[in-house]
Image (cartoon, rainbow, N blue to C red; front, side):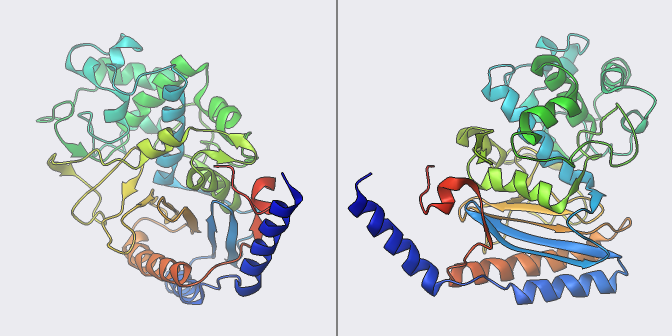
Length: 363
């Protein structure tokens, strides 16, 4: 590159940095601290970043960068990334009948697709406490065989006919990924997504040691490691110097799959209109129409604003019902973060990848 162009780019970057400053997010952080105190929680973690780098990272109480917590349904977004990854590699078709990979699924159950299974439209739902999902004495393969033989679709449901939030269908999709993707769900997620991103804490052992991985609900993570995953999504599938997903695969996660289907079951905090992509809820807030999130039952909230290329995660571990307080607080926090981000040129406190450190974007 000619020296004159490099010089001009360096001057432009220096000028931007001269007027920019780290965003403080004081209001959202205060709301988060109030939530932790009011719920009597031992601690929490607050992280916000962009595709270019980390904007804020704060810990409360006993929580540190090394704290690892079970993340419940925040597992679903992690799983969706693996599902679209095997699809983009030509190992699976998101719209092929499950029977083409798992012939033990016959009849109408055999017509379910990966896209339906990861968007809660496959004919199961309201089943996250099903014993077959929680049996730590069997493997994922054995659990899915039991679903194939002995777990019919919900009464009155049809494949593709309704939205019903749950865990059975994602369990089946996870087994499809094992069969087509070269082996054990957890090991392949770690080797194909975790390792390229420098992630070391994410596994599916958050509810106790198991080989019957709760695809939609048993993962655990540190705040930083989940942040590394979110940064990759915000950067259209590229992170830590690796192309983990195509941009088109990331976009699949944020396409509404509910459409005009009736809502057979949704969690109480899923205010209408219900919109869901693959492994993630889609925002209905005017302040952030391009935002997706995957809130877990214990209060862990990862989110990505695809338009702004902004991401974040709020880490707590509460008991059942904690989201009655957490969800409204998080909505207030997200609005405050987006307002401050839009109003200021936030300087990252840590830059991701050498290409951003040099002031240029490759993608």
